[in-house]
Image (cartoon, rainbow, N blue to C red):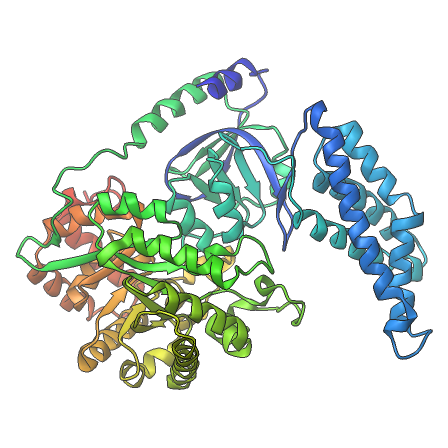
Length: 601
């Protein structure tokens, strides 16, 4: 309420601006803009009180000293075969930039005069240097900007790896970023921001999924974010209608404050959450939760979730190159398993790319979605994979934990993973380490796995159907690319046929199929999935209540009849039209207001 009052009191009659956006996490956020910067390593601008300036200067100087020591080693001739080798000269130049240029001094001045954190001061000063260097006429000197950029990145890495005395909560802030990494949003959510705005990030991006899971309103698709918004701007994020309102008028703030209070009603629950979800004609549907932290499952359990269908273990990686140790992982897996109890948890092994591994062994990939990621990466880096498997096996002692392998492309991936798991199991047994006997599951999310589902099913204990990536890879659509978003069609006939094939493969092998992508938590898709034969769903916590209400109001026989109509459709538009007409005629009251669009006249 204080922040709302500040927004109203600050009203200087600036013209109110309304910017269209894509609502990817429903809700309303009201507050001031705080920018999150950085591509690989993301950071905020933090305005410091006078009492923290000296501590921040000390922190910056420690990072510079660390970089100086690194560069001295790299520039030392004894490190190389020949004393005048170019590599020594290059890092010698970098050392001179730190020791003899004005870069360091100007950053310290920026910290002191602007009263900001070291990361932000580094950005301000290095941007000025880079702009000036880029304007030099001589090409040779102009290209020296890369040396300045490299030194700046090295200092930034040291800063972000050191404890900060400037960490402050961003309670009530509107966080703006060109793109927000899942690890960054997990750290951010702890501070309870009012909302998030990004340039990139569609409905099925991991960032959007996490925002919905933690009830943080989010809007994306704003082009030239740093030009249309600035630090400290008064903003309303309308995550319901899809709009960002800058410099809102007093009456606008008051209106959305009321909308915000009406929209957020987490205690609304109209049926017995202790009973299984059951269709109107008696078919029991298992609902599990997708979570990243144990606290999320406490709420999911209250809503009636029966276990954790997907624990994204990469949520433990808070920044690139900081993969938790085996003991740290054991502690985290114990905690999540204890939260789930006898209902159990499926721990997906790290689903990350080379940029998050952070070992500097691989160059940045042009197309990371099709690159060395998920199980491919950890079959290439078996030591890291073995560490995680050891941690999961140790944690599974007296706990119900399963292992889920992401981005499996064929039987060969499963065989190699099982061999590694068996080797780790033997080593633990020899050392007398207690462990459990987790089941092994495969994520089915790439086309080759769909075609090989029968054979893969013979090698695993369960399938987890990842619909987000399945749609992306099956239709060759980057799900975070706004320019092709209209081709990202979850109800494309090819997608529904692929899901049907996976269900049949599961039945033929006698193994369960759990759907855990965004389709599982969307009321528009759930009747189709039930009609296709799926009875196990895992979804984000905030979808559980809505989906349980829907399931209770439909009959399996009606869902099967609906699917038989859908199978005759040749286009996505035809499928959506059939579903919308059927829902409006039979189940209109079961869907959120506005989801089905206007009723036909």
